[in-house]
Amino acid sequence: MRFSLAIILLLVSSVVISSEQTTHYTGLYESANDAYKAGEFDSAKALYTDIFQNEMVAPELFFNLGNTHYREGNYPAAILFYERASRLDPGDDDIQYNLKIAQQFVTDKIEPIQPFFVSKWWVGAAKLMSPNQWSWIFLLLLVFACSLFTLYFIASNRSIRQMGFLGGLITIIFSVVLYSLASTSNQEQTKGEAIVFASSANVKSAPGLNSADQFVIHAGLKVKVVDEDGDWSRIELYDGNSGWIYTQSIEKI
Image (cartoon, rainbow, N blue to C red; front, side, top):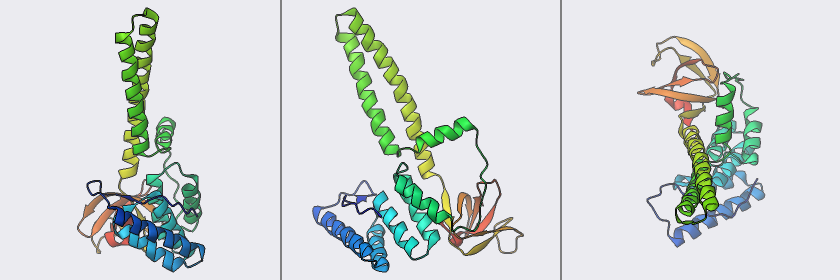
């Protein structure tokens, strides 16, 4: 359990948090941490949830919410918040470790279809950092490349000019790679996924109670949401199986 004193970030970028609001939510966050340390998990969860319901998000907040749910034995909710934390900070070892621990309590053990190793490696590399982190590195490299090209245009020494041009060209190539990683990271972060919250749910062949049952899934399983039709969602498991499930049976990540 990490008790970071960092200020929780506001998700809606168009709204600026006043200093009074910042102080208020920082105080709530510290109170929630204190309650968790004291073993008062229900109180801690209520305080963390209060912060979350006011559209405040940060990996620390989701991580701590996951921990409170885990302590109460609510493994689907714990997995949900660990997954949300992982999307914001995919390289955090504590988040990944706790997520794997919580997933051990999931009934369904799905063997995912293995992607081509290059694709798997690329996605794995993209997940090392969040889209924002990749974007910052991309921008820094872009600025560095511009500086090198400027050196090429203003330098009088031929060797320095060649160095500036080649260095700028190589930096631009790296920048393009980083931009692609940022794009892939963003796709992974925003793709439609959900956690099953129903203790068990029948996956149907079509949206509707009268359609045929195909298979049963259980609480805590992560699925891909590929379509929606009224109160029904078409899901796909990571082993390739798919079907329709009542939307209230799942919670989107």
